[in-house]
Amino acid sequence: MKAPRTHHSRTSLTLMELILAILFFAIASAVCIQLFAKAHVISRDTALRENAVSAVQSVSECIAADPAHIGTQLATGNPAVNTDQAGFHLYYDANWQPSTQNAGVYRMDVRETPADDLTRVTLEVKKLEDDSTLYTLDTDYHIPKTL
Image (cartoon, rainbow, N blue to C red):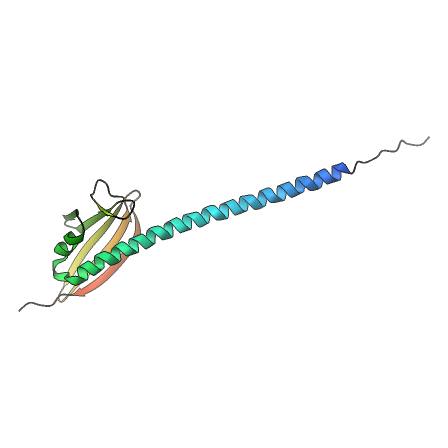
């Protein structure tokens, strides 16, 4: 007596290929989504740093106009400059416009260290949310002696 013959359906092979193709595209899309998310984070951080560099450059140029009177120079372009023993503090809102301390999202600390004919000025921009430093610049200015 012969064993009954079974017919294997070709649809099971096609179904297996389809499942493998879906699995491949799912893995590829997960990798692509992670890459796009990382690119977005890098782009956002770069824009923050560019804005911080621009703000520091602007303040540095103000100071360079008259390094002997930093407080006066800073008060010229900024409505609310706070001062304490550490130095001057300028606040910026989310759009990098000068603002008050209460509305500030970013803070620029301006510290000066006088030494003979040079004054070292450190400009440091921080994000107030987590106190992380976005950009720091150390500059030296020559202060001419008055006669």
